[in-house]
Image (cartoon, rainbow, N blue to C red; front, side):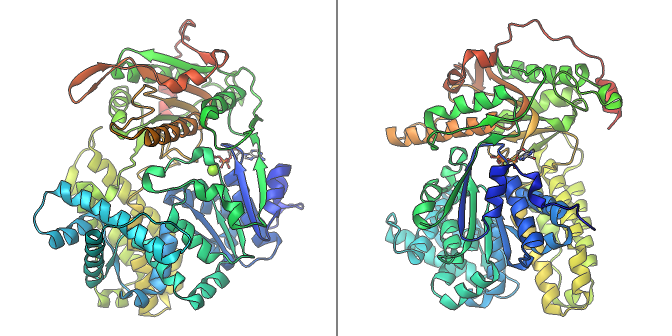
Length: 627
Ligand code: ATP
Ligand code: MG
């Protein structure tokens, strides 16, 4: 199809455009929330392929979650059409998996090696250490995991100053790795660690991948960990084309080994790198942008952080702050307020096309609303209150789905095709069968859904994931129909491993018209017109770990503040910060103070609820009928 004349980059502002046009060498894009980092990344890739004639096969886009990958692919398809399909869009783990599939014999695995889930890892470790509680085994598994990462980092980089690894632990790691290998398995850490080890020992292999991926873009670069960083360095020659994008103030994965230090030293690593700042925020109202800036100010890692609100709004809402008696009352507050927004604001405008005073062009729909929280447990009272009111919602859990009993059941029922089946059955049939069997397993396992029935919810999410992947694979299946057994087997195994990788992440469907319940971590990169951030209470946000040293506690508090910043900056027009004055934990009721983070927000930005209650509208039943 013909594109209108003019560049793809016309959809960008001058700074974004400059960043997208710097396609040679290294570029670091440092920018706050809502400044169009992700948008710039997609336009840059589309521009490279369509307007600079770079073969799509040479482009690699990396981001951190499968969902973010799916969104990137979708946005790229909209911009670059069929070319987009040939750009590699992957998480670090999926990229590592791809390398290992190609190089399996060099790590002593067959072409059909599997990715171990937690149950399999525990079983392997259990056999090595003999008796012990599951809790002990889990703790040991965490130690093994971090030792593995340290050891792999050490082989790959002479520059790093590794923390010492206890010799007994190193010995256990060696035996554990041996056992995995004997079972033709790799674990999650291996997906990055093995490619890093392989590449750092083999210049020819490095040259091979450097030649394939000549343009690399990484979104959310502030959250790389050491091994991911090393992998990226191995893939990028000194004069390579690398574009790293991120916001140090949104670094929220230190607890998982991410280190914002890699972002901060980008210009030392690449002395000729260009630096671009984006400062225009296209997401949020003026008040919310001001609130976000105030929230991060005490621990910002970006000197002189600038963020200018570009959204023009007729009657901007202030940030609503509410103190509630307890968590039940807080949940009721959220539901009441949602009711008002859905009913009161602008049902009629769907017909008239009128933009109402709140700035909603089409009335508020369920998918416009997100409820965010620090820890998964906080979702319970909210989910229960929404369910009582009959409001549709979807919860995105940050847990490893593969660990839910229901999901384990589903994965157990996914077919492992025999070699002969693979040879004689069209891939499409195998995939359909996987989807159907997964569905049956869920139905058998759990029955009706209730609010707290997480396994069922998770299981349904997995089925959705299987189905989604099966769409995804249909063209592949056609392409491989003529191909040999080897190709088909690889495609199918790739699909199953992808599924296991993906099983970690997503029950959440961005297109469903439901209210989103998300942890702050899961909300990163997303935006919603209406955001409720619940549990803004001391001890919840910031969450505190007893017994930490002063220095560690200060670090942890800074990261909690960045999480608060991430939460505040998800909102486009309406932001509610609420806290319970009392909460129960382990059967104990305790009084809690509001979060100290709230104090950073100036009173001129806030609405503390002294206004008379807004009139309740009556439009919700009509809104529901529209679904
Ligand atoms: P985050 O730090 O939260 O990941 P981001 O910097 O990646 O944010 P995007 O998600 O890319 O920001 O963009 C935020 C919103 O602003 C999106 O709705 C996007 O479409 C819009 N936007 C970005 N740039 C422009 C522009 N030049 N003109 C109009 N809208 C824009
Ligand atoms: Mg983004």
